[in-house]
Length: 144
Image 1 (cartoon, rainbow, N blue to C red):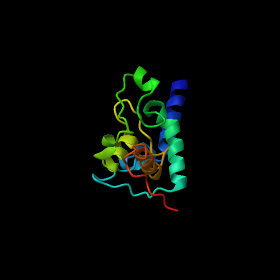
Image 2 (cartoon, one colour):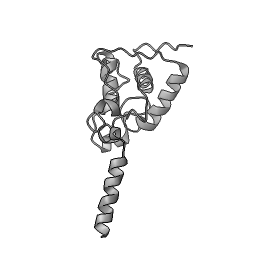
Image 3 (cartoon, rainbow, N blue to C red):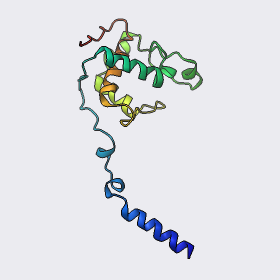
Image 4 (cartoon, rainbow, N blue to C red):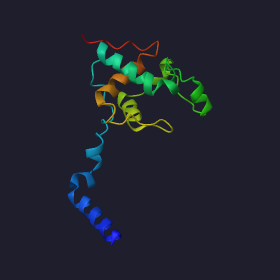
């Protein structure tokens, strides 16, 4: 009797669940990746870069380092070979779109920045912030 009641309850819950939750497509759960060669569409602002710095400090600095050099105890203990973003050659030939996709989707052991947690505009600002680590890269022009 208890099994029948449990089975009936489960069937009722499933029947009342909106079909959108059961049949979500990838487009509904994650935004599409930018097209190849896409330039950063977000103009850096002081506020946007400040938020990007805060996000970086929380989510990235533990492995990539406060300065972006990739020399951290955690990275070393995990055996990670992290690129040195202070070296101008490191990011010189990387499109913004490539960086966006790596941040959004993760890379190797690096976890993704999920869309529900960090909006696309924040990821684009994070790219501007990361590019500022290189001494030879021109600083992002801040829009006032």
